[in-house]
Image 1 (cartoon, rainbow over the protein chains, first blue to last red):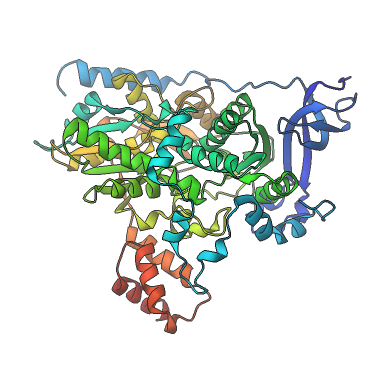
Image 2: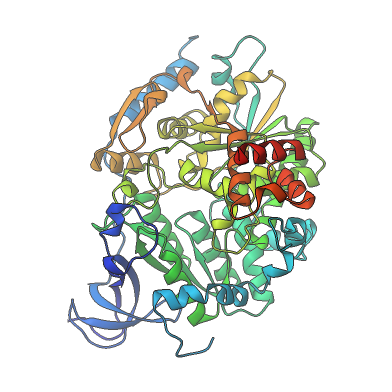
Length: 99
Length: 472
């Protein structure tokens, strides 16, 4: 149960695939145009319910409740071994004697 | 805005011109000639801001007067691959020092200050790039509401790490971020919100946005004169929507630096369709690439305003491309040899500069126009991790072997950095062809011919020859 006033993320379909009339490549033509935003939940609800939120720009927006207390999880990625090789190479060329 | 208007796709798109007019406080029809030409100079003057006034606005908001740093070690490394006596001194404008971490603050400062002056309650921008954070930052300073519309996810809901970081930053600065899946109909959602809220359209392509970049070129000329006693021989600008090339060149000209060669540089993403759901996450750099650079250069008016103030073919002398692998390697080089950890996309022009410098004499001055901030997602490591996770091969080799969407080839040796010269005349002809579409080629007026010559930095004879070839 998500409580009124909690910060949540919502999802909606702006245009169904068949409603998309713009000039699109074939793969995109098969997809819905989807939208996500966040805001303060306007009434108690469960995940999956159709809800209304008040966004950071004071806009009321409707959508399906998908996440409560959403947070960012992007990162600095995994180890990429090539990068330490580049660093080593550059230091050798520049500071380890002439090429 | 009137309530109760139908909000379906066709209705909103049909009201596009009226929504735009309200949202820019500018009637573009005033600048139209009725044929091909429009009065670009009058559009740029319509901002009513002089360079001094823009400088004052930017100074108040933590924008501009960024350091011009000499990259001594990168210059020394570049010279190892140049013939004796060659290898220009490479400098970079550290635009990451702007309030929100990129040169886009220059565009946003002027646009948002103008919105405030006109009494708008908020600002909106459609961007997946650094411009979102720039608008959000300036809106925070001016106490305005802010909405940023981003093309962010593919149909699996997977987002580019670089774009996700930009969303995070916009939110951190108080903006609402509306995220969408791939497709140009983002413009519909954008227009719909714009209409409901009655905001100012802080478009990347309005004259306010472009006039804000003039200070970048002006500062480069002034800093070079002060530090080095002369104008730069070459300035290299990353090219996507064309704003940086346009504004920087305008600023250089305003400073009287009319001998400086202006080079546009983009990452070569040839073959990746920009509106493709599948190709969306096959990119390993989401901006500064040819997917924006070429269409916006050859058809500037397909943006979110009736006439774009960013018209790079008016100003560029050359257009070169580099690869994603070169840009990633260069980002490591900047960190390791110069102690500057910056975002990869901002190093597109620096990657080109490394080999361009080798063709200039040692006493020549080459200025790279930007750096951008780096952070989680917006960094070599997560971007290359993301490439691997999306089936893109990452390896060492010759960057010329890179196939966008299939591989990222890191130079096996710095000597393999080599920009590729694009055929600017081909782009110029393409612009002329697109501009003349729907017009009688046998009867193009003298004023339209002159306009097209200015649009392409050529002359009337070039335009005439191009049109003759189109007729044949």
